Image 1 (cartoon, rainbow, N blue to C red):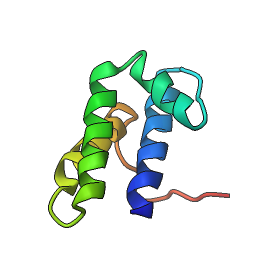
Image 2: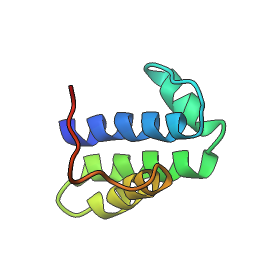
Image 3: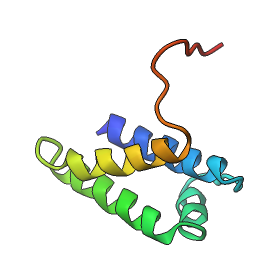
Image 4: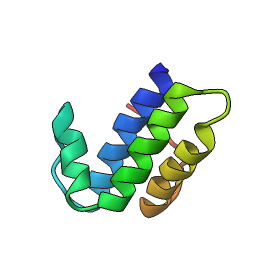
Length: 84
């Protein structure tokens, strides 16, 4: 449950930052994502809700929505990444 909610937050932040939009905290993060990307917002939040309801069978749509956001940002980083 924690991983899904944390990934939901981080994915929404990445989607906003990639397009140069401001972030928001709490309910404002969702509202800020919904304004420029209503379809992405819907897919991401509905998939996260389904994954939270049934984490053993429903993470596929959530994973696809997060991967869509990662692809918009240039894809996932695998090698050479370090956080300082």
